[in-house]
Length: 430
Ligand code: HGY
Ligand code: MN
Ligand code: MN
View (cartoon, rainbow, N blue to C red):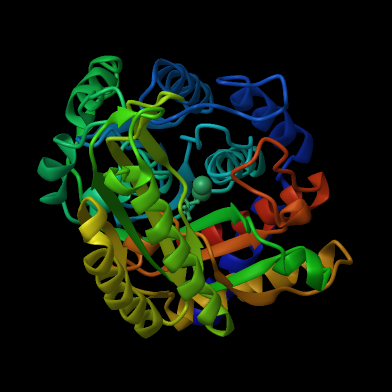
């Protein structure tokens, strides 16, 4: 009996995979990319901006046109559901629809749209599933406008986090709570649901955003886990003064002090190159930001990541020493904004995703999948605390992402969606 059930699940999963339509997916990606589309081919659709709200409405309309039930939770995470034959916990797929300030059309969006394509494929195959299949568009994965990243998925897993998130402000002093309330008010026709729902599992399809798959010449990656990450903000306070009249030896130059700290951090990262530590000082705010005034205040961010969390802990200690040593040249404040240990996905999920990727690759006469660790963080790093979770990667051309030129070959995007359809359907039939 069990064998028949398994065989039926495989046949249903194969039917879903066979009905994935590459052209429909390509059009869906192009359509969503038009919300915040840029002349350089990139996308600017930061979380909860008017552009993002319009994109969200577009996704709701598309999902409803496919017969999905649509719901929204208290962190404005959007859920698109294809009902199953039972009220057992759903199988969830999806990703995020927000982008970097200058991002690409695939980071996040591909996972959401491939999830909707899976639902359309199930509809076209006219196959029932025991469990409902849900697609999610998580709120604020990028964390660029409002830090930290993954606010929607982390609040879904631990609702108590939302209160603290609401107070976070963006560069224009707009609070996340205010933007969130606007987003919720913009969806009066979408029923509200509580955060933290039981789930049978979560599978996220995403572009790799790095060079590994392309270098290996392999179209699909089975993601084993996600490296650890820490974000900090450094605030340096000096004295604004005249650039022409103030002798160098009497200055309290916040930029000179900041550059000194940055120099020490890059030198430390170079010492740790063998551990693949990655350091980025991505955002600088200088005030008064005038060519002929000595900077009175500088704020800059630190994004540091490594597969070995002990290396990050060591870097943290060195960072605090560097700040302490340089504080004499201006007051320095260090704040940790975000900290995630390494994520490891459950073995049974790796087996499922490996089967799905192997089948899809074989049927397409492409090389079999390889196992990779994710250099980027994803909402799956929080879902892994909540339910059996896995990720599938497709290659990024030139390993490039968080860049308008982000691109993936269409046949790889199709293959990823086929593997996703198989994996999600297998779970939904169990
Ligand atoms: O920063 C990250 O790793 C993700 O792409 N937001
Ligand atoms: Mn992403
Ligand atoms: Mn991203």
